[in-house]
Amino acid sequence: MVKISIIVPIYNAQKYLDRSISNIMYQSFKEIEIILVDDGSNDNSLDICKKYAKEDNRIRIISQKNSGAGQARNAGIKLASPASEYYMFFDADDFMETQMVETMYNAITSGNYDLVICNSNEISANTIAVQSTTKLTDKVYSTKQACRNDYIELMKLNCANTLWNKIYKASIIKEHNIKFPSLPRGQDAVFNCDYFNYVNSMKTISDVLYNYVLNDLESRSKKFTPDNFNISLKRIKHWESVFKKWNIWDKNAKVFLANYLLLDTVSNLFYSQSPEWNWSLKKQLAYINKLINHKEVKQAVEIANPKNIFNKINLRVIKTNYTLLIYCFTKACIILRKYLNKDYFFIRKLYDERRL
Image (tube, rainbow, N blue to C red; front, side, top):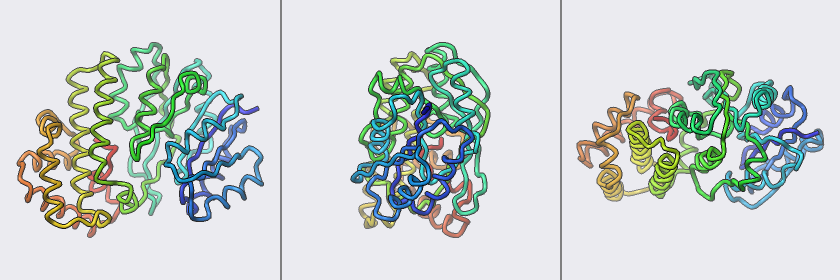
């Protein structure tokens, strides 16, 4: 009998699918269904999925036009077995520990919790070396407000917005019709925030069970468009509204969102020089000037207090409000990265929009 539906959005992932599908198939917990959603891939991803479906009758396949990972996950939820009690989400280029599903299932059923969150590694795609590990401790939250009070701390630990380090109650998602929004970025954060509205109890565990693979920065830059800054602003405004509703809108929350906006601003400054954008120097300078003089950014830099040394430097540079200096600084960092290993930990932090 199916107890857990594991939903995997797939887009041009042929390079990773043998590893990822096998990784799920050979989990120690067997009462699962594996829903593979091919989101309009133009490589051999769908054929690979079909090959494994012939080997394991727990695998179900959806093939749809390219609509984005969020819509692929929505399709997976819709197809999930009515008997399934829990949902887990898995990225096609990552891998988890063999006992992950079993450990998460045992944790959530041990107290009938609404949510369980585990630790994860960030791993270099090139070397499979662990770059960082989240630092959750074993903790139980018995009330709705207790869960909400720690939400920002979970975000700081990089554990709140991600999907793959969690197990969700299917009944909550179905009863409240929680779906992934149609956004090019940040759907996971919105989905988790919406789900959290209905979380009355939760457990965090210290087990490190998931391995998130950091792929090449150049491939990530292709997903980054000039409209991402506006998308970030909408997401931050959404969080502000939610934090007020949850009665956690205090100085800590304001500084956190200021740090977040600062980081997204820095990401946009760097990506404005991306070859994919192909902007002239004049257009790049105009964009930088527009960003640093945006009302929300000017407010954020006054209260932001980043912990990362590189973001402290970025804050100082942005505060100069000197467009040409900011351009030269970002250009220098990009050149520096080219002369260093692409997985150099600290330089990567300048590009990773999830980090504070």
